[in-house]
Length: 617
Image 1: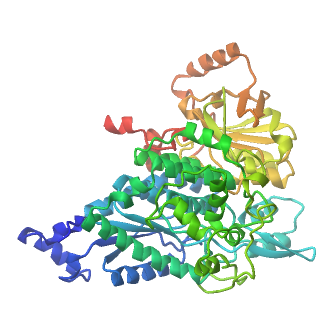
Image 2 (image 1 turned 90 degrees about the vertical axis):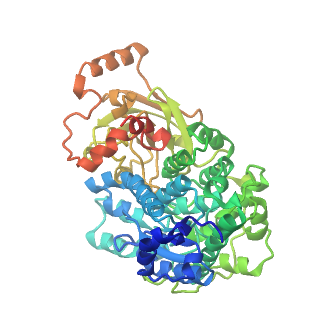
Image 3 (image 1 turned 120 degrees about the vertical axis):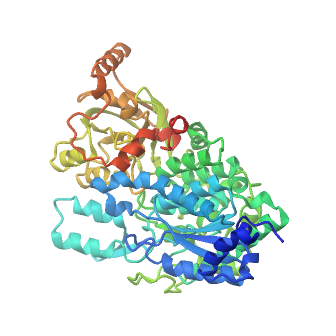
């Protein structure tokens, strides 16, 4: 018989108690001969991207049973960043990533589970599950609940697509009436699923396709479309197949660390750069690579950003396209197909289908495939009906978007820019680097010089912006919001969105050691490392300082002399216990967050926990 991890429960009289407990969950003698496959579900009634995942798990469970596995479901937590944003709740978002990864490890190892299928959708949850998979290195398949349909609204007799960011932008504009804002609010998020733009959730679900741990269509096929059911069923069959291949036939090629190799990480990062995805994905890829001992660092991302063209613009970088439009244009594999034609990808990497990336593109790229079922799947579009019911509509576009000149996905020869939609900048204020989403910036802002307005918290910056205290030419500096300094590295959509509301997004910059939502646009620079709380130079910036940004040269510079910088460092260290801590900030920090802060590293390493500190306990 195969040596499944869970097979220990059938060995000898001393395991009788364990078997008795398993039987109380519904298992029988025949089940003890099969692999136990965990359905790691992040169903939650708090999160629209997860509200339907209970139904998803039922579909997957039934299919696993039919395919010869024993499905056992357990839940993880899920935090909705959009709901937690703008108040102290956001302090808990990033730390929840480590909590979720740990909880998965605990359940899987405590019960000697053989494999897992991860059912996720949003923000920190998909990255956390990815980290757990890399850590555990047992057969794993990822499947998301799918993206939300874009909202629609009539403005001046014209139908416009809108999303979550539009609700925040319009709410911050003092010229908009309460009635208009209510109208936007009612229309921005019309269905279940992850928010309709290329925000963190959809970016990560797309990247899981590129990594090879999720099936084609995972990142872009709408949550409401009936075709999503087929994706769940196929994913369930595959997890059983690769589990048996590993335990019965010693096929290690399907283990997460073999699929998610350094080359696969590079492919995923090139996808993110090409489509101008969320900057948060950098944070999460760095963390996941660390879990799998993969040699993938900020320097790798910097090199990739220099050679990968920006070929796909999606909301919030444009109003023309949302994730549903990316799907119509061929989805993730449509973008990867264009990069492959430009000889940029590592196309020998393999995925859970057992196919190389080259073979996958031959089968799934809409410009090359001859398979009718694949072409039909990419015709799946939005039903246009407000609903929280998944798989409830079967609308299909009349034709696909194959326009690679001015369409949603462009060829590399018709790219928006030769370099990608994400860039790494370095300078005295960011010795270890910082991140900017260039996809959302107009070319006239690629070189920017401004006067610093410094804030010790996101809240103070927001008050100042809404009070009209920021003017054109300012660089808003928000510090002590990094992983350690926040703690928790708050996602800051509100400051950038309110700059847009006040028509300052093209004439001001915002820099922070915190992070931004995938919904951020404008000259917004985050992840400044080292962060202020780790003695980063951003802690020494003063009101009135000149800060220079040059995206062409990938530089950011605090324009003071070396001697002045040394003097400020000495002065700060003389503060003793109060050095490199926010001045007069009143923020209640729970014990749980204090524990997180004590081990948190800066963003350039993925905001992971400092292993050296753990090993010294």
